[in-house]
Image 1 (cartoon, rainbow, N blue to C red):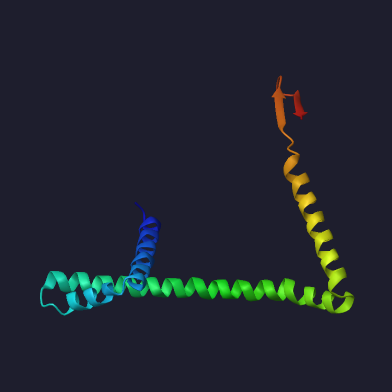
Image 2: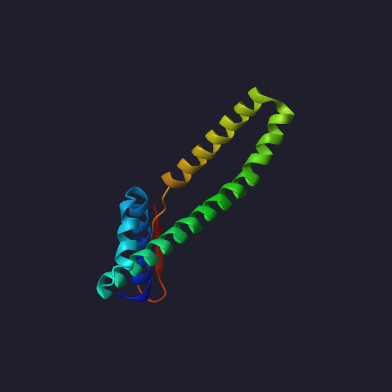
Length: 134
């Protein structure tokens, strides 16, 4: 296993531990009691669990902030022009315009993915090559 895989496993485990602590609140008291138990093995597990869950909380907070940034960016890119179009032409015509744009985009995407051109190159000798498209 390389470093990236271990980092990924650590982050996934930390998020899973934090979510488990949120769902089952007894986990926090268990980890705190293990931390102050006096047994070095239990203290180590308690501290590691608390640190792991705090890292999971920060990972979830980071992803939440990234999602909010994306929501804000898409609202600025699409929301403001849509609102201005709504103000300019009214609700009925803006809905019709949105349906026409959506249908155009869907047809365009279907046409792009429906046509697949395959290139085959046949080499007869060093100076003769045929390209077959279908």
